[in-house]
Length: 94
Image 1 (cartoon, rainbow, N blue to C red):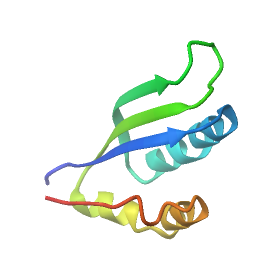
Image 2: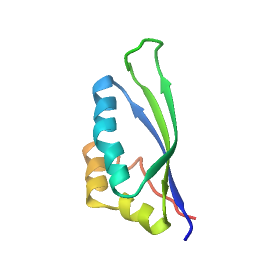
Image 3: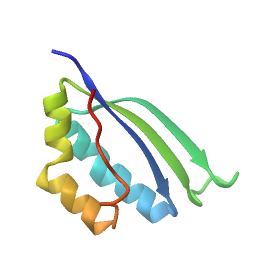
């Protein structure tokens, strides 16, 4: 079976939302079979505290089916809706 990937770039404006993302979304990704294979942080300041920035992730799934199932899951769709991201986040498969 061919592996499938999510490529995500997320703008996170403050430390509270950054910690929320780390504590909720990243464990959920693992629970649905996703494995983070690459991450990149771009912080908007030089301080030791998160003042906003962008998080980039490459998430590997065992198959297209698993990746699509996670994307269209009720949990992920509710998350997108709660953050008003429905129009900004899409999935493409090859």
